[in-house]
Every structure is written in structure tokens, then in C-alpha cells.
Amino acid sequence: MKALREVRRGQLISIESLAESSGVSTKTIVEIELGRSVPRLRTIKKLSDALAVEPAEVEEFYAAIHDDGLSAKLAA
Image (cartoon, rainbow, N blue to C red):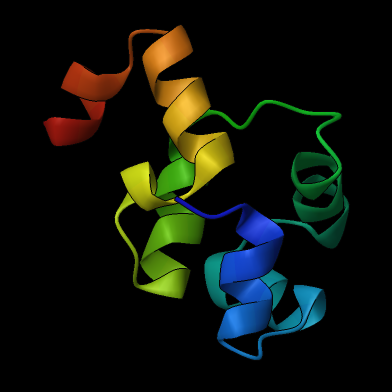
């Protein structure tokens, strides 16, 4: 499992490009990457779709899903 920053950088995607392709603000992405913000389910879905990864592959997404009991909602 990798951190969001690692996944993004591994795909050679800038924060700005990820923001544009996902519809999530650059500020939100930075806050998630720095551990200052826990992403909402909608944000997790947008970012994982833009990165073409399963949410469980990204540390911050996995933690948010399992800490908040969102795994059933994400599967729906």
C-alpha cells in the first residue's frame, strides 16, 4: 500500500493535473497528502478514479474507509 503522494508521483502526475482530472481542489489534495485532512467518500472516489487505482491501494483512502466504516458504501 502506498501513500497518495507516492501513487501520484509514480504516475508522473502533478497535483495540478490530478486536481484537474479529478475535480478535487489542489488545496484538498495537498491537505490529504500532508495528513491534515481525512478525505470524504466522494473525494476518495474521484481521486481513485482519476488515478485508476482501487481506493484500498492508497493508505489515506484505506484508513478513511475503514475508520469511518465506509467500505460498504464504497462498494455500492
